[in-house]
Image 1 (cartoon, rainbow, N blue to C red):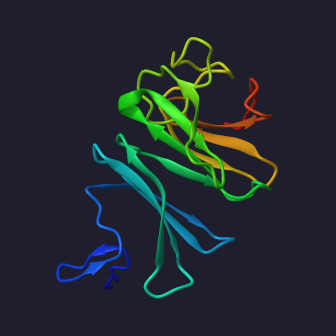
Image 2: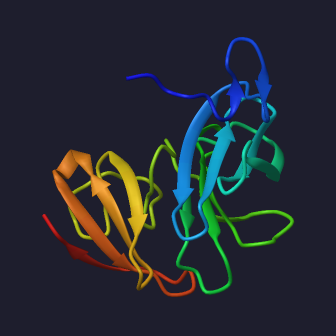
Length: 172
């Protein structure tokens, strides 16, 4: 099976964006849009409309220091909202649709490669308000946050309400 380069360089030609390093991808299926982030020192987040050939590029955020994981809540009634981890800055940022900049919603975490939920900021554990090696996250159509908690071999579901403390239901 052979892949087709749609963004970046194919070895001969520049096809839209040039990245220092691609760290994360997310496809908004409702809008047929690809989000990609460059996690270099002068990183950026790009959005590409997949309805066009070549895909039309829109810069969502520029001059960001090493954005890593990106998740887009495509069910937000106000438009797609991005959640981005910045491990070197120990924070997670929420970037609302059409916003000029993101807002830090979680900070001072020790290793922001996932999500932390406890008030002590990234103390791992197995309680419902703790995680151990969170790996991935997803949202359902009701806005519930699901986190893969690899260290506890479980998936946790959290009901988020306007960035207030979460309630948890363990699913594993």
